[in-house]
Length: 214
Image 1 (tube, rainbow, N blue to C red):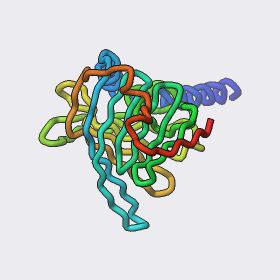
Image 2: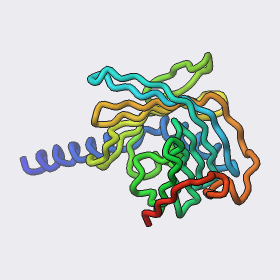
Image 3: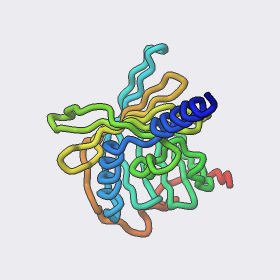
């Protein structure tokens, strides 16, 4: 009887271990997608951000653009400009003509623009959801779920092109009911970059108020 119970316990343990494994089909697609972007020196993209919250009856569309190189990025969205050189982050608010300076800590970012292509590699479970079409292009949909249950984001869905493994869109689901969808409208690989791309030059913002929070 003890032997039977031991075998049953072993089979339950193995079944749990198997269910905890990552989805190999999703993993292959994610690896191909990630390799594509990491091979680039950088990229620039125009996108649409859609915020939805059914309970609050909210649906808002915003357009923006972003330039990324490694851990560095420059994001323009809704009258704000966020510039990150990998160590320092500047948040410029056009309406107030004010910039806040802070140390960049990637651990404090829910999903930063530089993480989306490698997010799945640490702290997330991933699974294949379905095939779909976006702007007439065949795509795969992959779902990521954070292992940390305290994460305010409980799910991220990536839509990846079957043709060239580029990310066409991603949707972030938050526990407060907000859903953010980012849809890529125009993509430029390896745009011209220089030393000023990922640093804030206050001489270009006349009369700007600087608040250093470091």
